[in-house]
Length: 261
Image (cartoon, helix red, strand yellow):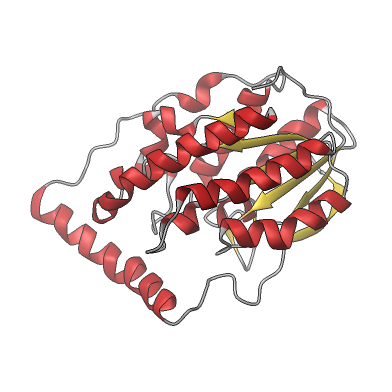
């Protein structure tokens, strides 16, 4: 990881639903999300910061590269965040090398233009989704590939995977696939701290108080069944139909605009 650099004038975010802000607000009132929160933190140190968010929910890593990289480069950012790969993890045919290759292509293209790039590793969501335990190895493998690709291009990596708090259920929305407002706030704080933004600290990595207590026994099993019926089932139906939550959607902030703090 390269040394701290915190003076920026143009920040562009690339990614999928997490970067778009799903789980932090809604489509009626507007989504905020970690990237918006991160931009606000940056703007406190960089008055006049311009920010664009090209992320669209449901996108695979290859789709992020194909649809968002060229528009991002055209905006000539001096800072970009690239976060994608979770949607790939959930597909039956997952290839960590292929996904990491898409991410590395974005790292390479952006850094070649002098852009400082920041990304993150993914927490082990199987800790909050027991039915997803077979995915645990995929997460570990993809994180390793992300670190390797980042290291080759001087990309800053926020290590969400290293901290137990990242799998506290209170940091996740009811669907357990998207961060809650608290989770988005923690991700933004992690990005700011990793980048070395003045005024940031490691409080984002500390446990939430009071400690979370899992629902025991039969009641816990009923909670899992309700989650599967409400969220897992509809998600599987969309996959079988070849549909995505991002169908027909476009970026919420496709052009650079001044960040209001």
